Image (cartoon, rainbow, N blue to C red; front, top):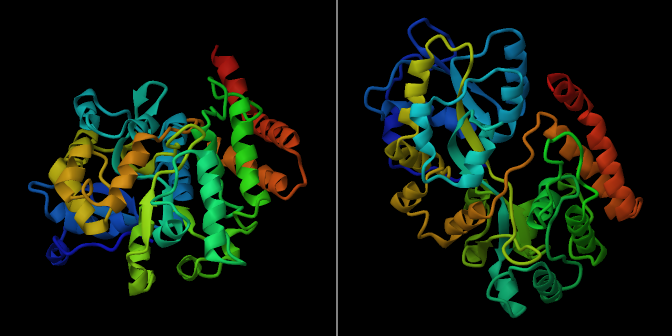
Length: 414
């Protein structure tokens, strides 16, 4: 779910937009978008002076990745579109998208470096960030205060000690933090915080046996071993908001889309009892992964110059501000945070701090499959079916198998 939208531009939603359906015409730019952005794109375009005629095709996030790949295979991609940042390496590898023109690269000035870096593949900027997100910790401020802490500590050891006290304050049968065992983001964030590279420099082999990843996996496992986190998948938690409100857990790692849920799903008496904070790390503020969506122009675009001109209009500061007001998305440019009041709001300001500590993930097309294998093995480690040494070796083995074709291609290229 996303942040509840604001009403500043709500009146624009009723304005007609030529080509606002999925029918492609020869005099319009075909644009594929997802989620709240697709829903609000007509209003956004209507507010842009001189916006071209655009045919919008909304796609569900759950099917968008497969739709893009099958459309590439069928030579039926649109002129431009919205893509998840983690897809850019794959789209670049298959030759589906065009690099950003030199004249537009200055748009990234003043943006969060880690987010921009996810858009840069082999030294080429392949997409431009449209909105950003990352994960941090939502926490029960009242439970931390009851345990003697104004906020969660910034270092792992102190954070874990605080979690023990918070759990005790919450009462028997409760935990301190929710880390669903089927979600890889939590372990990845801890690994990045410890300085793990995850893959080697060429992205051809796993680096999960390195000391940094071992340190992260050991810390991750200890949270379950010490009963600070329940050994449960996300499907086993019937209602996150009810459980958070009753104190079943006091820390919930999630992204900016959860702000709206906290405000709408928690009872009124809970609204002053939660806050946000960056993740802890082994030696200070922890890392996270830079997320969000970017805008790309596809290689088969009928008029790439017109498509890139529209990208530039969508990324103008005034349009970034309008998108934030319509959807609650976090803008990629720091200056817009000030204009929208995000920098002054302690709930959202913590996201800027976390984004300043974000680190990009390996830029290989196989990454999503690798990280899924990583989490499957990590669950075996947490459940005591593998030791940490056995686990990291197994993750490397699986990663190396998935990267076999990449090694072969790079060897042939050399």
